[in-house]
Amino acid sequence: MEDINLYDLAFAFTRRPEVTDANVATGMCPDDTVLVELAGGQVAVFNVQDEYPAVILGTLYADADGIREHDPLESIHHDFEGEGDYGDGVDDLIAQCAEALGR
Image 1 (cartoon, one colour):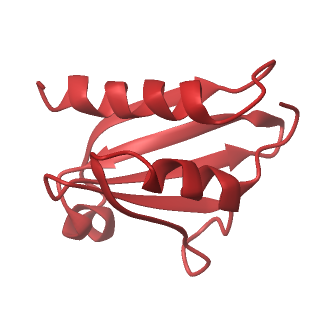
Image 2: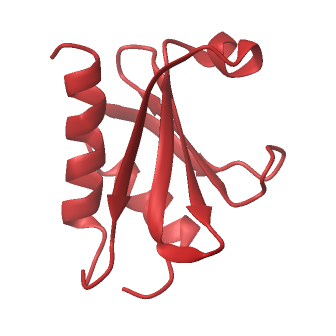
C-alpha cells in the first residue's frame, strides 16, 4: 500500500469488536487524523505522515479529555508498506493499544 486512505482505515477499525467508533476527524490538527474510540473508553488518534504516506503514527489516551489535556498513555505506529489491505495493520495497532493498557 503506497498511500493510506483515511476513510478506508476508519472503516477497518469499525469492524473490530474492541472499537465503539472510528471516524476521520476533520476538526483536529492535522486534518489527516482518524479518531478511534475503544470499548474501554480510551481514545486513539492516528495520523498519516506527509513524508511517509504508508505509515500511521498514533497516540493512545485514557479518555477524550486526555486529548484536550495532551496527556498520552502511549505512542504506537504501523507501516502499511507492502500490505494489500488494512486488516493486519489494524490488528497490530489494536494489539499495541491493548498491550499499553495491560490487556
